[in-house]
Length: 623
Image 1 (cartoon, one colour):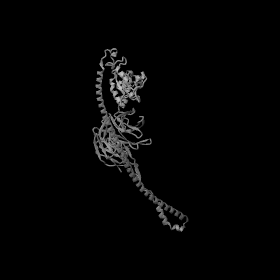
Image 2 (cartoon, one colour):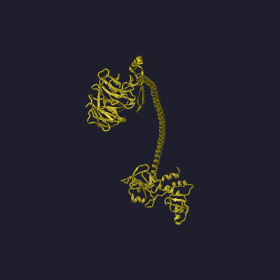
Image 3 (tube, one colour):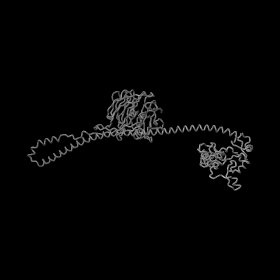
Image 4 (cartoon, one colour):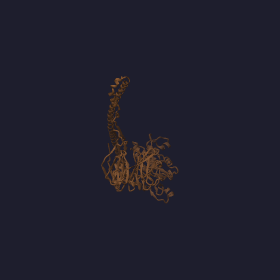
């Protein structure tokens, strides 16, 4: 920057952005016009008028009287220099103008006298006013004048405004400079110092400040450079990530299009084949119908007009037609097909594509497209070697368990966090909120998926809550083992919507796609299905006590998959039962005391056992 620009910046108030008028300097060394500080002080304070927040550094200062703030001699002089050098016309001698009425070119300006003087008046001035600081107004450029003027600022003699003699004493107690008379009369007994000594000390401190300031500037420049580099880097990475995601999205969309295009084409092809077969069958039916109608027409004519003699000779033909038409005729189209669609499901960690099966209609009302097979079982040993009382899956990799009365978050079967005490059962409701029942309690606890406690809901009419599930109607289903009841609770209000009395204790609960309720009671070795038909409830017991097929020995956890297959942890028989909608029965054997079960987001069965182990079972396949 040029000298003129630098000086212009120094003498410009950062509040009004004009050249300083009566500049005052705050303790933070920032300078503003007196009137600007008045306004700043008024805006800052409503009740008190003693605080001013610096407009630049935002430091707050307690200022009782703005008039008492220090005036910067340097800034006032720079303003004066700027005003002189910025004149478009040649400055004239003030003395000649006043005394002689002449316009004589000025050659110097005296900072002490505040006057422009011509050469002749300068001679008189220098003779009678020795020691005054002057500025030459002669130079090749404004820059030359400015540089010479700045060099002379220190030569000024600062006079006491009260006594008109030079100030030469610094009062340490009152932090001000005074003349000898002021010191004797107003500052007697105060510690005083020589102005030059104090100034030299401050110059040394300024040098230290400059060194520190330059170091800080370097630090900020490095930080700015690092921040700019990071900004550019993150912008580049963001753009690359967006481009990569867009490309991946295009590929995924194309993959989905390809998947569904193939699916649609298969349905169209099979549907078209069926349509052709149906047309052939229809043509055959219409042709046969027409033949019968023609025969009926002929028979009507024969009946009405044929002679008795001829009718007698038609006995064989009529008997043959009677036998033909009396026989059962299967007119049904036996090549009918049924198109079964299982819609896609969008989950946190992926998408399950829709499936479409073109097949002969099933005589069973169940529409499951999943068949059970003996799949691979993988065991994972958890860090906490305690019985897994309950388990749910949030994503493909994140599961929650209840062990030793606490909830535990596992990611890829590695412990991430533990929280809560005295917990019994767990369920997931909307927005991935976790809800828990707890020991010998009538309270339900709500947590976020990262284990942050949200709230508790207490139900005075309930006593010992165990099983818990969420219904499709934004209700909580709570099993009370003290009253042997199922309680439907409105999650918005906490009100009890419905109560179902049981003949068993609801330790574990599950809800099917058609709102059937599966209840497990380990003490009575029983599992029941509660179904609703209108206002009528029907309880059906499935299986019985024992160690054989379709029998239970201390059944525990239960769950249901999206195809309405039921899974029951038959704990003391060391297996998990699978019941299909078609009432087929399968066992997952080789498990040691399974306790809790859930379906993972990858559609595998997840089993928690009595020893803190997890078993993943690949149990299903699409037909």
